[in-house]
Image 1 (cartoon, each protein chain N blue to C red):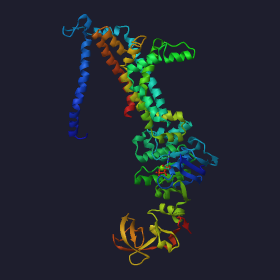
Image 2: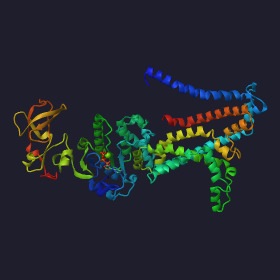
Image 3: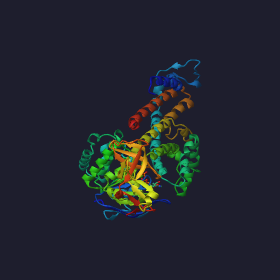
Image 4: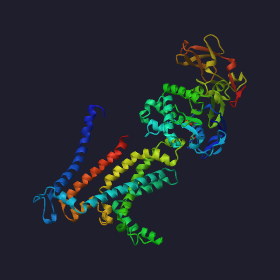
Length: 334
Length: 292
Ligand SMILES: Nc1ncnc2c1ncn2[C@@H]1O[C@H](COP(=O)(O)OP(=O)(O)OP(=O)(O)O)[C@@H](O)[C@H]1O
Ligand SMILES: [Mg+2]
């Protein structure tokens, strides 16, 4: 069981309110991702749930029971830190055994769980090494192993992959997703990487300056962002946001169109412009296009071998059904 | 320092310092060894100019044969051990306290370090006259305030008093080294341990103490080196009486009070051997920590 509810939870450091009163429900077994720009309070929110910070006001309930005043150890949650926070003077085996030793489990049970975790995480050959003798990815797995053996009600991850290189990050992303499918335990995952958020989450919580901008499944956020901030934050490359007369034609303050929802042609189209920088990824190519009369260049996604070069003329046509409209306050118009 | 060229250059550059240090060490060492095999009593007319008689190992056997030898070794070890015990334990406690955020932190830290700046002779005098004096000392007043008979600190409890004085001097050093070590501990490790269900005592035992082991090693090594040769505090307080005669104090008495240079030099050689034995033991016990 791992149902977490935040009710009007507020956090201030001295005079600075980092998280204004906030409500959030995390269902049992869900994979919830907190995403948002740096400094928006993601870590603070996670630490509030973990009990490493005290709430200024509000209630945190775990499985329906008030846990606001409980110390971290009593909440039944396990946390994986960004720095891994392994105990450097203990072997991998002892690191993983530590929470079980603290809980007073029998040595046989400890060994059984260590073996199981090591097998699941490919750590069997490294059990007698010290953390200092492991690679970043292996350390990360030890940190996860230490969390798993506690059999917690929920896992909390704070940017666990941000110290890994790109290839390893993709691999670990899959491993964590698979772990979630296998254990079916609630996971709360903090990241500022929207690709991680989109690929792993059942539910994404988009935060800005401590305020929840939108909560929803990855596709809900992609298809109907509640406001300009979410529209710009979710999706890669970013959604094109256009203001001014072009937006007024659609009775909106701002219109948004994703790079993949623009049709490209060399002879006919709604918007005329010239190709600027192009980014070739092999499977896709992104053109940055300067459109006559628009303040900002647009990004457009086309297939891998589209033959256009710097300075060429280009014509773009948005898919009318996929234009997002926002009012002056940045809220979505439906 | 990887290339052959830079290694050669480094050796050349280091040479003056190494030669100077070697000379510094070797000259007194050879002189001590030389005198330890000679009969040299200046007051009885022996002098370098007249030539000194070779007496073989007689000085060595006499030094060990004296009834004060073994008690002095014991006194030395008791003082070193006692001071190490007190400073390491109190040092850890103080370091943990000073690491807590509190009002006036900067001033408190300077106050804690202050005793280290007081000369050993002065601090021993201050302790002897201001605190431990059985008539006028602050401690005597305290005892009287509670209706107790004031203690004759330096005669009735000479060893504990001496350990107290020396510990007071060395506590700042231990605290300072341990405080920097405490501050270098990653706070996420402590938080992880907290989430793993370790209460404060266990966090201290399993996380903080192992992290401090290297700093504790350094404190023990450095203090031992200095404490083995402790002298001023004894000279000023008890003058070697009441069982506080350490090896270095015994050597002092042999050379300057009995005016027997040969005998004192033999004692000096014993002191070197003792220091090396202690050093080897310490390296064995704690050396593991240094390369971990
Ligand atoms: N102990 C503290 N005292 C004062 N302010 C703090 C403290 N911890 C965090 N803050 C402030 O709270 C805000 C949110 O911090 P937080 O660490 O939660 O951000 P974040 O979303 O995790 O950012 P990042 O993605 O960079 O990790 C920041 O503006 C930060 O300066
Ligand atoms: Mg953070």
